[in-house]
Structures are given as C-alpha cells and as structure tokens.
Image (cartoon, rainbow, N blue to C red; front, side, top):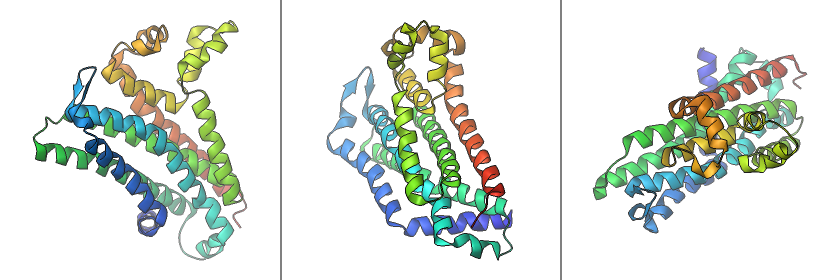
Length: 275
C-alpha cells in the first residue's frame, strides 16, 4: 500500500506540473466564470433559478468536455511510459506492478476530478458571497454524478492505454471510443433499431449500457422527473427503475463499469510483454 500511494502521489505531482492540467483547470474554471459573467445565475428556466440554473448548465457542458479530456490525457499514461522506456527503470525498483498501475489510476483520478469539483465549489462560494440560495442537494448529487463519470472514463482510458502499443494509437482509439459512445447517446436515435422490430425494452437496455447516456438521462431526471423529453422511452425507464432507483443506478453503474475496465486493463498489463 505504501508503494501504491507513493506512486499516486508522484503521478499527482507530475500532472500538476503538466501544461495539460493547466488548460484542463482553466476550461472548467472558465466555464463557471463565463456562466456568472453572462448572468446565467440570474435567469430562470423550468423552475430553476440562481445557482441551481448555473449548475444545471455546468453539468451539461461537463458531459461534453470531461470524457474526452479524461480519455486523451489518460491513454498516454501507460502507452507513453512504454514508449519512453519507463518500464525498464520501473522494474528495477521494488515496486509491484499492482502498486504502480493502481497508483497511477488513483493519482490520475484525483487530478482529473479536482478541477471539476473545485469549479463547483467556487460557484457555491460565490453564491454565498452574493447571497444566493445554495441548492445543497443538487450540489451533492451533481458532484456524485461527475465523480462517477470521471471514474468511468478513467477506467476506459487505462484499458485503452494497456492495449495500445504507442501513444498515437492510444489517442486515436480513445477518440474513436468517444465517438462510438456519442453515436448511441440519444435514445431517440435508437428508433432505427425499433423499426427493425427490436423490442423497445431491448433498445433502451442497449442505450443504458452506454455510461454517457446513463449520465445524460440522470441529469435530465432532476429537472424533468417524468422524462417527458425522452417520450415513450421514459415509461420503460421509470417502470423498471423508478426515479430514486435510476439515480442510484446512474451513480453506481459508471463506477462499476470503470472499475471493470481498469481491472481488465491491469490483467492485460500484468500478462503483457512490458518493454
């Protein structure tokens, strides 16, 4: 465990010094600043006002930005070290493969989730300063959703980085993975599958395997409890999950999905020819 946390600490220090982390932090911090600057916290939509309105918009933007940032920066982790010849040096130290792999995983998770959380905390602090009502329930719920989304795509990124033999291939595979998930992002697009006589329950089940769709539907459910925007699909989701059940699923499933991908990546990493 000592080596695991030392590896995580080392990865955190390296990431904090990297230029990509500066850009990554500026993106999420800048989103909050821009939303405040354009007076979004003073607008009203579907009953959401003040900081609630800002957080709803922030999480929608995060869904588009967070996955690709996490994938692109993570896939270079193992693949980049393989190209740089770090493995030969690593194997000469008394650090187990498990400690190194999971240390990199936990360290990278801290780095990718920290700016996202700090941006939301900054919004709450500013809301307190200007006297806005703080939606603590919404803040905790959205923080949990963003944490699960970051964990999920971090696991996917670690799996891709162990399979790819070069950082260029890893980045290409990460981008393709992101595009495939976007292709099945909207349940409406599955109308083609239903037209081919596929049972609606099966089509919705396939859609809800996609962590991006799970995340998107969960964010919609908070301001649209009946999921009217999804049409008849909402009946299948609500009948099988209920609102509270789906919220729990939306947090637990991406974490489980990311953990399975990371574990599979570690199994491949341990059995592969490292150099």
